[in-house]
Length: 277
Image (cartoon, rainbow, N blue to C red; front, side, top):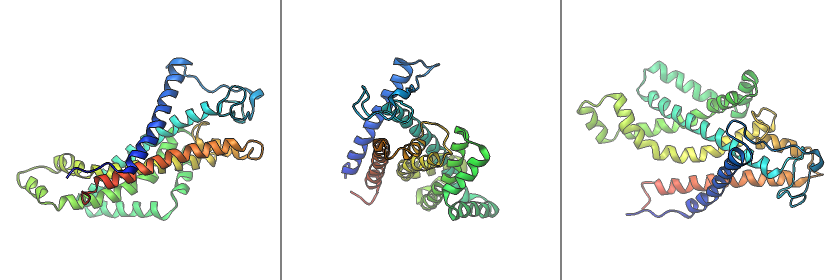
């Protein structure tokens, strides 16, 4: 029976479409209209426009502490957050799928190390592990991505291990082995396609987690870009009484993106659930 697209999927997709159009428009504006591929445009500082209110001085959302257009700063932060979250999510999911499968098929010593790593990551708060890694690697894009990958892959690995066990117990997998299908081919041709739907749902939900983690690190001063929404919230905190609109606009923008991702993830879970008609 044909499945119906849930209301959560429609609403989540609609919200994310707006953010996608916003990010694309900023890309065109930054690289093709106001700048070039080699010299992209960056929001201009103008201390005379410091803390301007929305709809004043020709600025739709007002300005920040440095007199930059808040709309431009938010746009730069959106593309930065989306880029970081997509890179980290794809990398953590890929590592998690591979490690989860190897935890089933690998020798016992690998399983012991795997369980130890999983438990270490889950025992300590992820934000503390990320802070320790960032303290060693320094404030850089590579260090931030590495820290988020280290704290993110165990969750995907646990899901992949459970799903791989379920798929390996199916009759058609035994049939594939009986006709001589090797482990590598079995993994890429049967296991991965079978667990991808579940992983996609968790990846969509995981993107919002990465955005929150990156913002938390930026708020603590460990971000890799001045356009990190967390870093901007940290700066907005210092002028909360003089310009509360900055913190409110930043919070609502980030909340909208996270709500859209969670709605889409929940809708996908229901849509891909084999028990649902």
